[in-house]
Image (tube, rainbow, N blue to C red):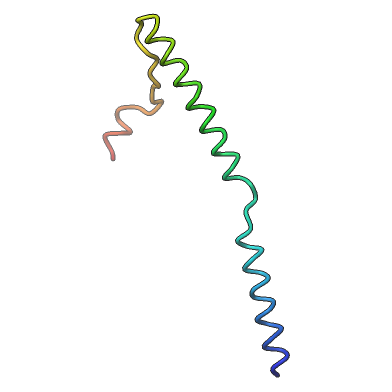
Length: 69
């Protein structure tokens, strides 16, 4: 009976460690965010040098949709 309990504990620890393993998605998302931030900062700096209005992102949601929240 003790060997079965030990086997269950080992199996539970193995399964939990596999479930917590990182697939690399966080790193990929972080790299994309950093690249987008760099592009936007570059565009902002170019607009500042040229003296033009910096680009602004527009929301695709309707004003009606935002009024609901």
